[in-house]
Length: 212
View 1: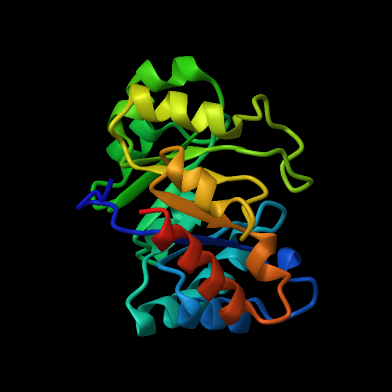
View 2: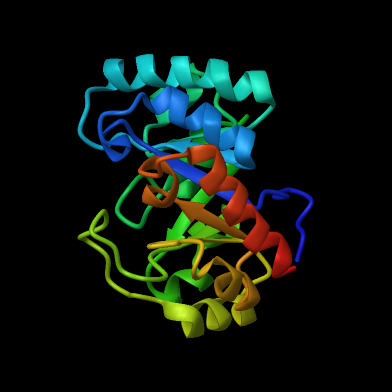
């Protein structure tokens, strides 16, 4: 299902540490050349000034390619860099609060970890939903539900919002996850740790397109 507000198919979630010593800016640029449509900068353990510096440098690249930049859970940074949007989880800033504080927020993403979240006000004001995680991953230790393909199908049957699947997404499961109802696949290590990020992105995008 294509959504006019969310036409993106391949979503890169990047942090410096996930790139294992490679320059995260270079990894991102290569990934965009390979087919990434939207990029989220997620830096959990650094100060806001350091996050802001990284975000400004990354935005130069995403702007050059016309790709939206999403900031993970730091409203001040998102607003200062004039990002395309922000993504928050269950224990982060509430989407309703963000809507009040940042009127120009273009894309507001919200991670779904429990089914009851689908009927709350936070989901209602969000533009897209992160299904987190589809398969459990070492990068997310604090998750509650491992959704699996059945979980993606279930959520798809309960909402018309765009769904972004995250959690051990790879070339071997992207096709099935899109078939189960995800609109977009979000990847971290499958691109950040790939020898050739552009090729990894291209192959993932190919699987996503095949499933549509």
